[in-house]
Each structure stands twice: as structure tokens, then as C-alpha cells.
Length: 306
Image (tube, rainbow, N blue to C red; front, side):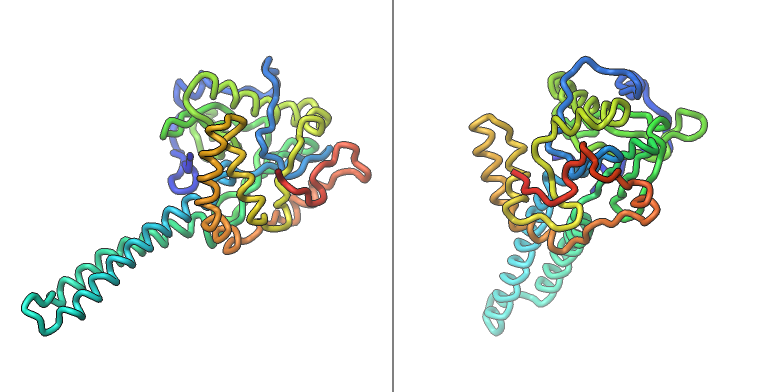
């Protein structure tokens, strides 16, 4: 699971590295790979392609982990409190300072966990990316609720090694000097560090690039399942299916990810139910109106994700 960009920010105000230049994904250049949409599409039509964020497949896992730590800390505080009360008047009476120290120490840990919890819960259900092929603009819903709008042709796309063994496809917004990174946003898909994994990321890039530069027909033909969360929260079953889908077709991995999805389901449900549905500004919605009876419109009505 890769949370760079959510719990930890991408480094900015720095120059492009040699590796980033070597791993650049160029607009206007077709890669000889089979495009793959990687279960990331919310909507697609002749005007825009809307995608989920890279954190969405794993939403709730962090909340589940943090709740576990909070519960353990509360358990320790409760245990020390009970032991302190039971020991009053006994030869081995626990001193009050020990209770205060324990409460303060684990209370501080709880406070940190609650602060981290707000990165995933009490936030937004997802952080969509909208690519408008009519205006050639990219609109990115940031994790703080603001929106980045930048020209497709002005973004420096590349593969980067974001840590924890994962590769990301990111878009760098550069300063006027053409080398200083002012902002970075990730595309929805990340993968392991092997060459095969990097090729899979290139397949996803080609899916996005072809939509923006060659038209909506290819995307409309390839997308089989949608993430129907543009105007509503996902159901518990939908969240389970999306996380489970990360296990792929391998039987063993499918079983492992089913167990993981089941364990994280309560946390995911909590994170989604306490978060707001993102709303695009009116001016972006106005610029993203698809034509009537659009033959390439998919996902404009709720569809169950499987």
C-alpha cells in the first residue's frame, strides 16, 4: 500500500532528477503496449474521463490500523486505572504518578493517531481526477479539498519510485524554468518495483493518453466495470469488492486479499460514512458538459461495481 501524497507529501520545490527525465511518459507518443484501465474509472464520455485517486482501493485500511492502536492504548490506560484503584490501601499500592504518566503517554499516542485518522476519515470519500479532452485540461481534487487545474500539455508525466518498493505515475507541474517542480499529483495506479510492474503502469498511462489524444472510443470499449461514486457513497459490499479486486486472478492472492478486505471493511465503512462526497466547482462542471445522446458516455448513471 502506497500512501505517499496522503500521509506524506511528494517533495516539491526541487529540480527534476535524472531518473525522472529517463522515465518520462511523453504526450503525443504512442507506446506499443495494450492499454489497461485498472478499475479506476468513475465516468467517461466524449468530453471528460473521471478517475479515482490512488488511495481509493485501500481506503479504510489505515483507519482500521489506527483504530487498533487507539483501542490498544485505551486498553492499557483502562488496565492501569483499574489496577491503581484496586491497589489503594494495599502494601503494593500503585503511585498516582504512574497512572498520570501512563495516561499522558498513551493519551499522546491516541492524539497522534486521531490526527492521522483525519487523513482518511472525516475527509473526502475520494479525490477524483478529471481529464477534459475538449479543453485539454486536467482537474485534480487535492486532499485538502482545493482543486488544481493545469493544461494537459504542460504537465511532465513520469514514473517515480515513491518508496516502500512502489512505482507511481505522477504528473509534475513545473515552474517557468521547465525544471523546478512546483506540485506533484499521482495518477490512480501504483505498482511494485519490477520491470513487469512498470510495464503495467505504462499500460495504464497509454489508456489515459489515448483518451486525451486519440478520442473516447477506445476507453468506452475497454472499460467493463465502473466505480459509481461520483454522486454517492459506496456500499459496504462495493468497498469490499474493490479492495478484493487488488488480489487479481491468482487464487492464493485472491484469498489473501479477501481476508484483508474483510478485516478492513469496518474501517472502510467508517472512513466513507464520515467523509464528504467531493464537489467540483461550478466553472469546471460548466466546462465539462458532454453532448446530448453521447454515444461514448459510460458511468453517467450509477452502476454496481463488481
